[in-house]
Length: 341
Image 1 (cartoon, rainbow, N blue to C red):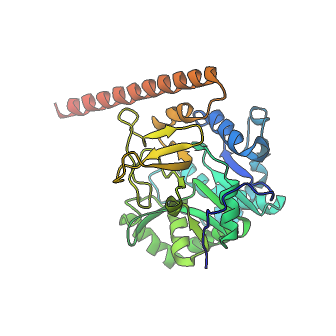
Image 2 (cartoon, rainbow, N blue to C red; image 1 turned 60 degrees about the horizontal axis):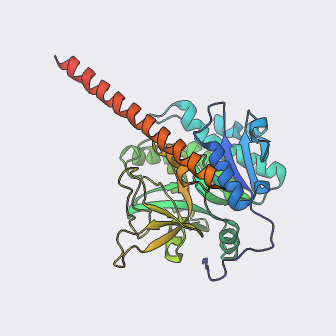
Image 3 (spheres, rainbow, N blue to C red; image 1 turned 60 degrees about the vertical axis):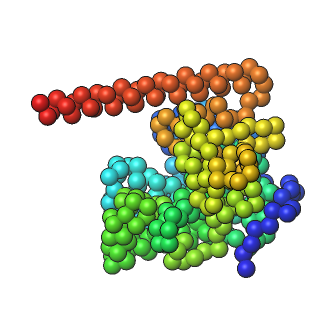
């Protein structure tokens, strides 16, 4: 039986966990530098790996791997992929391709385990104690399964633990599902019907959700760790974090109300009967055009000067992007009115 026991969440002497960030192309995610600095602060720069295809000097403080060397990992899938998404072909195909390239890379470099994080995820805690307990519990990895009702779910991997065997099984499952025309057609029908929380784009995350429900690998749903006062954030824009609690929201930023204390970052539980009950966060996911601007504000500064600089950076970019969105909305409304005249 798989179980997670946090009664011994202490640092171990075992081999540290590699943490992978994928950054393809010259268009770098806003404040990715802050994301890397934060991960290095909590988990050590020696354990941070930037998987990229350019700007290698820019990431010289970390382990930098040319992921394009492992593009051959997508060869089989290239001949199977069908595009059924309103997103661009490049975006959706790349979301799939990352898993095949990483799969080829971990095989070539003999990497047994890793943690994958999107480029807008702040890692605010040391992940090794979680990792060691996850392995001790008999798990082969983790996902973030967000379920609102039986049969209505979506699974994300923007912050996830992977064994090499789990990743290989997932890649094989994707190819097999695309290869099986009847099974793929049924999945596409489910997708278009809105079964996956109204996500109607065929994506790697829908495939991951089906992989979890059909194959039932021994994976830990990170949201369940909320019971242990451990939170891996689904999205700071969302009050409900996929398990039990609903969190208070910031009145201006419209993200979870987060308190940065000396020992950790906490979310304020809104549904608690106890005043200002707090729950500890291990990661924060700043998804969205406006929300990414807040990354410096919630990153851990090393001194007062950096704290002030981060606050100014965040507030300035938040205001600029907020005004830009407002301006575009006004422009769009004016154009709609003009068409009706």
